[in-house]
Image (cartoon, rainbow, N blue to C red; front, side, top):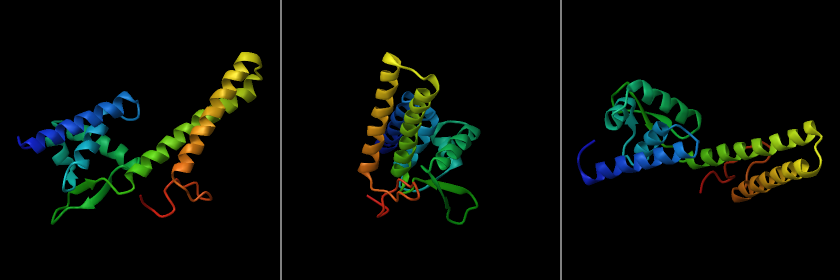
Length: 163
């Protein structure tokens, strides 16, 4: 990346996003760095572009790209007169994060429910598990209220397709 202020700022943003996703345990740091750099790029970037700018191996970039594609945070695009694959952030990326978060919240709720059933707990333990289950049920409802969904399909993307 060039030494311009914008280039340095883009790398700083990329690093900051990498730290956030790593510190929250959501994704490895490199995934956040890749996502961050693509977010602040005017044009789609190739795997080679990313490896060069982030000074990281092509193999590590490939793994990060695969995970970001699976999470719906990146998409392939064709490059001009090139067989290389280029990547950009799709407009639905933030809803992919919403969907991922909703799945996690639901898992917390389910584990509390299963523990209530299998432990046949009473007293303090039952109270703790009920509060956990109920808390995550409220969080799940907040997520669902934030974006009306196509309930039948379980799809958390807004009915109108965008924000």
